[in-house]
Image 1: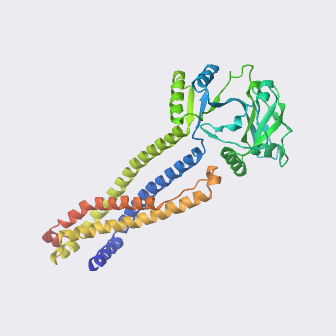
Image 2: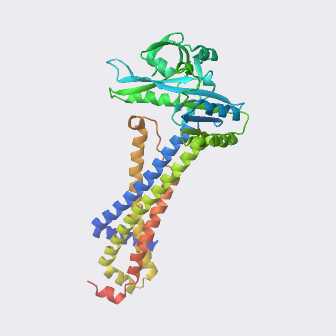
Image 3: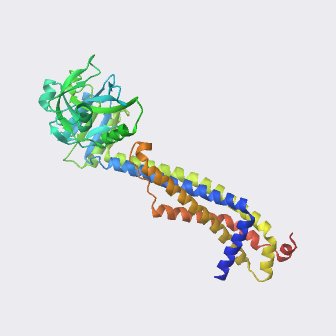
Length: 416
């Protein structure tokens, strides 16, 4: 206990006599703490958001996008005769519909041609993910609609709210424009499905965006036979479900089928999306490790320099301590303890800064990132940060501590 009090007293003396160098040392530790902890929290938030997104991806569904032609569809059907497929062909409108002078946004319709009963499978709302939708009013597109090329449309609750307010849209008409058409035509609404996660984010964007030029994307689903006389000519996406096969086998078989297309057809599944997130997490962790090592080395060298100057100014004190019986070990422990104390002060301040920063970011994430993001700081992150930086404090204090311990008493007492 007496030694501990002595170490604290000596450290306080160093604080009072070397304020500038002490501040620089603590500042270096604070920067290292902020970068290391903020990096871990940000990576965790990104990965959690991606996992949240892909957890909704049906584990027995494959989404294929790209230059898909009739021959490829035939290959899929012959390879998996029992499979259920929904076919899509995208036709974006030429111009967004204006929401009016008082509206802060314009409506950008994305028109998708689909096969019958497409809502029995997840919809490819995002470029690399699919979410199952549920009809909440009316019905989905039937085979009769496909064959007879009826001008019917299925929309979401989000789209319904924009065009019809609180009214039930089923049976009403809505303006739809295809790229192959020169004019906007009225399509009959036959069904409404529940909002998807992508549309909920669009609602958040609408609520938080004050830019008059902001476009709100809405999805219209119509029979794909309206796009072409050939039902499978302009297919851009296939949602594929094979209930009678182990999906890992199906996934490998589809990989083989798309190889001759040289990357023009891309396969999205739950497995490869999760693998993509894991690879991204690994890459970010490696990058963070390199950055952290660099910052820790710089901070450690700054600490080492501070201790060397402190020792130079306290050589007389070291000589007196040795003259009254202090051992080399006790001298080393004193300076290593001082380094750890400085490190802990910097770490505590750094953790406080990061905690405050991410509390603010989490509270205003919708306004800042247009999505609800939770930046969680776990006990493991804090503990690992403390351990890493304490190790840095110990390692970079060993050399100056050894230097102090090896000072001869005669030289120390003569030093002015």
